[in-house]
Image (tube, rainbow, N blue to C red; front, side, top):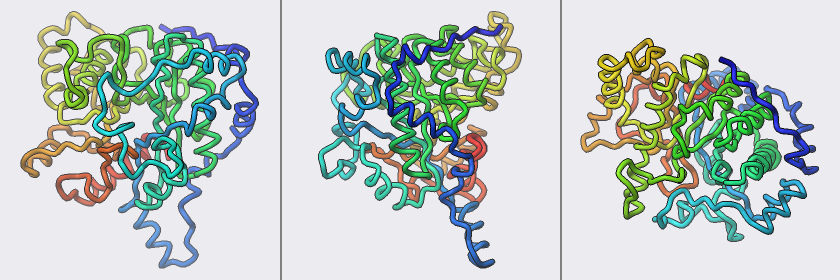
Length: 402
């Protein structure tokens, strides 16, 4: 069944001049994706460059940015929504209901000298991440509360402003960066329209959702979003966080931030179960998901449990015609941050074998957050050359066609 999607009218979003200027830059060629890798002039340098690219390349799939000030956001909103924002504000997003262990969940050294929020300074991001760790490509995932706006039209305008800002102030300014299409995910048609608006631009690599949504992501209200992603052959990323509007655990509200932070995999598990058993991948066989910052040690036992349930109860969902573990390994990619660190390092090697996802793990630092994973210390065991190549860069390169 094809779900019709009506694109949101430009006049509804009230596009400001800064967006119109950015849209003109859609002509940026795909060649800029490789522009940062210098072309060597001698055979010796050429060989060194190839070795660096294949053996030591790093693609960071999770970088967070923020507006320097509310006025920056306002400069990307049209007149209607700029006035609305100044009068009524936006529904706040702090990532959880609980006080943070670190302000803005950020590293102490990531605050710009001017006092702006962590993640708001391109020059500091270049210094602390891109240059410090020789990152070849970094993917921006702005977590600014777009999908949690109760005024859905404002949420759509908010998304458009963030996406235009990412392109104009970050991707165009720094060729090592790529952007996420932030969408108002609780309205499938509005989310699909935003994907259609940016889907052909090489600066955007995936659509971005959050782990705690108002309903499980397999529900049909979200299907127009998935159809749009498939139209543009674009993965959909699900990132740590969100409030959702319901208790954040299956047994109610916890008392502490440590419970919220440590218990986030519950939300990812619920979303995986929903997407598989609601038949999303039978409806959209080319759809791909990226699970970001949700951990991955929970995946093997969840797959075992789902396969067991499917063998006994699969007649309830006859459209799921193969074991859920096969569906998962075909349609899901997973970021490495936060890294799993078992009590005995050797158990990590066992975990990798149980996962059987060597082609689907994606390195991430989570900059500028306090639990940043440094590329040289992220993994608890030494990786063989092939796994390191895949995890650190090549899996992401293939997924995102970088």
